[in-house]
Every structure is written in structure tokens, then in C-alpha cells.
Amino acid sequence: MMHMNSATELERPQPSSLKDLFWSFTKLALQGFGGVLAVVQLEMVERKRWLTQEEFIEEWAVAQIMPGPNVINLSMMIGGRYFGLRGAMTALAGMLALPMVLVLLLALVYAHYADHPALHGALRGMAAVSAGLIGATGMKMAGTLKKHPLPMTVTVGSALLGIVFVAVLHWPMIYSLVTIGGLGCVMTYRKLSP
Amino acid sequence: MNPPLHLVLDWSDWIHLFAEYLTLSLMSIGGAISTTAEMHRFLVEQHHWLTQTQFNDSIAIAQAAPGPNILFVALMGWNVGLNAGSMTAGLLGVLVTMIGIMLPSTTLTYLAARWSHQNRDLRAVRAFKQGMAPIVIALLISTSILLGSAHHDPATDWPLWLLSVLAGVVIWRTRIHLLWLLALGAVLGCFGLV
Image 1 (cartoon, chains in turn orange, purple):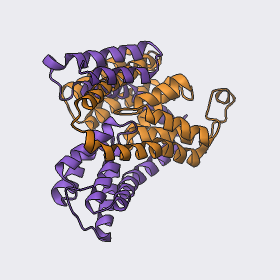
Image 2 (cartoon, chains in turn cyan, yellow; image 1 turned 180 degrees about the vertical axis):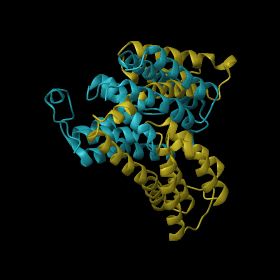
Image 3 (spheres, rainbow over the protein chains, first blue to last red; image 1 turned 135 degrees about the vertical axis):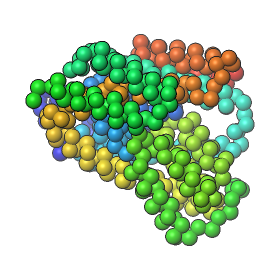
Image 4 (cartoon, rainbow over the protein chains, first blue to last red; image 1 turned 60 degrees about the vertical axis):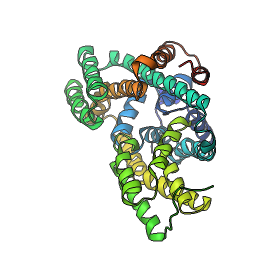
């Protein structure tokens, strides 16, 4: 159903098998400390090139407005593009199976080392790097706004407004999604040729 | 293992837990983390199935561990099961909460993704996906800012902020492997340098 079939798309790299899909998602999930989204972008767009930067943003827009964890939605959608329902389930299993075993093992040993300052410090340091990583992903994706149907003043302006709403004013994310996202969709709709 | 609570859970309790997570799944627009307040009300305040510490630790461990953050839900189920007396119950708790939180949202997302892929040439679908781009980028950068500045005091934690910014710039501008930067963050944190 979601298989790619046009000639140009077939030349692009894509997962060779369900096994490849499973291990690709396992590998990227295990690199995600404090969130996996940025690693999905690095692996899928920059390393494996299964998606372009624009496709990544578009898939993420859908993943974001649907209920459920965004990154799980996104991985299912990527798996589904290549192998339909089986691909979606495989990507989901890849994201969750090994990381779940690992997190349960961590929970079992956590009690013994919870008060260890070095462990605490290491986690702090890794969390700081993860925060930077997510920002870097945002900056890389901002590069795609150059090719957006709307002018840069509008797209960059609304992105900045969104940052003020969410990061500065701490408004619930859903408001910005509905207002700024909704306006963006309406303006883009009017700009696109029918 | 000595759980802080000693619960007796029967089948109706497990079904109740399952039903709660099915509902939460549909409410979790913007990610499951947006429903943590409701999970807290249900698990800690209403039913006393988890202690406050277990609740907080479930989130903290999942954030620190590699893998999608949604695994905090698995840890909550795990702890409810441990409180009910055994690791088998813990595994049952993992299954009940994880299937509950994933099933409705992943089904909806899969159907929505399939529909939007089949209708990807529709003007409205294109307008939606492209129109959401600015807010998608804004949310990423906001998440980075919020994660990077959460619970930190600028006077004492500036090295941590500096690490986030430097890691962000390096990842944005170079193709260095993420694991090196995470390792650097862990080492700096381990020795108390950030």
C-alpha cells in the first residue's frame, strides 16, 4: 500500500529487508539518551538517506499531530513506507524491544547506585549533550525553509513566534500547534497551485 | 527485592489499569509525556498503586536510559507489578501499560499515515505537511531550550549550558558521530566538570 513505485524514488537507498529495518531502528533507539527524535533525523536523513530533509519534516508533521509518542509514530510511518503494515510493526518492535529490556535492567540496578555522584554527573552531562543535539536538529531542519512555498520572513517569523510561545512563555504546545500550524497550513494552501 | 507498597491486585484492577492507559493513549497528542499529570492522579493519588518516589524514578530512569522516553510507562507498569508482589506481576504490568498506551495511538497513526501517503498529491495534504514545517522546527528548538535549562541555576550550572550549546553547534556543523559527544558529556559529568 505504501510501497514506493516511481522510478526516481527506486534509485534512492532504502531498507533491504525487515531485518535491516529492525536493526536500524534498534541501533538508533540505543543512541537516543533523553529522546530519540534527533537520532532518527541523523540516521534516516544524513547517514542512510532513506528520507530527504523535507520528507522528514513532512512525516514528522503527521507524527506530531497524531496521539502517541511522536518518535514511535514517526518510526512506524517510515517502516510503513517500505513494507506496509509489516514494516510499521517491525520498526515499532525495533524501537521498543531491546531498549525495553535495557531500561528494566537499569531499573533493577538503579536502587544500588542512585546516590552515586559520578553516575549522577554522567547522566547530567549526557542530558546536556542531548539537549544540544535536539537544537542542532532544529537548526538543520530550518535550512529547508529556504525551499518553502512561503517567503522566509513568514516561515522564520512564525518559527520564532512558536519558540517564544513554547520555550519562553511556557504555553501548552497544543496552542502553538493549532494557531501557528493552522495559519501556516492555510497560507501554504493558498500559495500552492490547485 | 522489597517493594515500598504491598498490593493485592485482581483481574478487575489489571483491566482497570489497561483501560486507563487505552484512554491516555488517545489523549496523548504531543507525546505521552503530556499525560503524566493524569497518570500521577490515577496511579499515585487515586489508587495508591505507586509511591511518589517510584513515579518520579520511573520518569527519571527512562529519560536517562537509551531508547524512546515512552518507556517510562513500562517502568510504571513494572513498579505496579513489583508492588503487587512478584517480577511476573511486574512483567504483566509492563505488558498491560505498554500495550494500553501504544495500541490506540499507533493504529490511528498508521491509518492516517496510509491515507495521507495515498493522497499525497492532494493540495490540502501538501499544504498541511508543508504548512506545519515552521512550527515543527519551532517545537524542536523549544524542546532543546527547555531540556537544556530545566531545573538548572545559571550561576552554578553555566558549564552545563555551555556544553549543550557547544554540542549543538558541533552536531549542527559537523558529521562527528553522536556517541563521541555523549561519551564526552558522560566523562565531563563523571568528574564533576559540568
